[in-house]
Amino acid sequence: MPLLSSTGLRNKVLDTGSVKSVLANGFIHVYASTLANIPATADAAINPANHTLLLTVYGDGISAGLNLGTASGGAIGKDPGETWAGTVLATGTAAFFRYVGAADTGALSTTEPRYQGRVGVSGAELNISSLTLTAGNTQAVNFTSISLPG
Image 1 (spheres, helix red, strand yellow):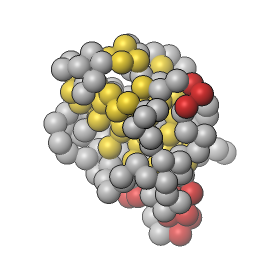
Image 2 (cartoon, rainbow, N blue to C red):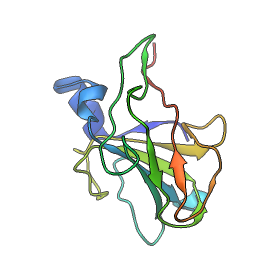
Image 3 (cartoon, rainbow, N blue to C red):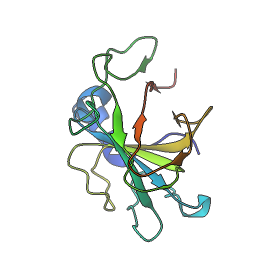
Image 4 (cartoon, one colour):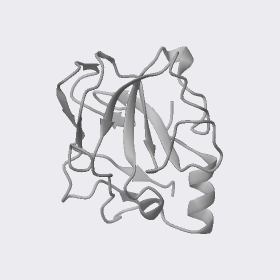
């Protein structure tokens, strides 16, 4: 699965703001799911029957929203002053993530800004140290890069 952007994200970036400003103070949600049940678009709803929320990543590891740093070379990553992490909510195997705006409810939407992609240990849109997450453990996200095609 390539990195998917929602209709809302694309429209907001084209009309009113940057990726950095549109996703300011947002969150990354990591889900367990069968491959067949991963939403086909970032506009699609999260369905609790098919998508188990394993982790929410915060800018301070506890409750603050995430912020992006300074763009360079056509890409933007996490703000270097933030420690992106979260406490694992449920034990399971990570399959996909959504980087969402602060007010996102996970409902079907063509207005909410979202990025969605695969979770892996290497070569995915979001790489973490292990796909097997255990409730109560802390999971860090040390690197992220969002780019626009040249």
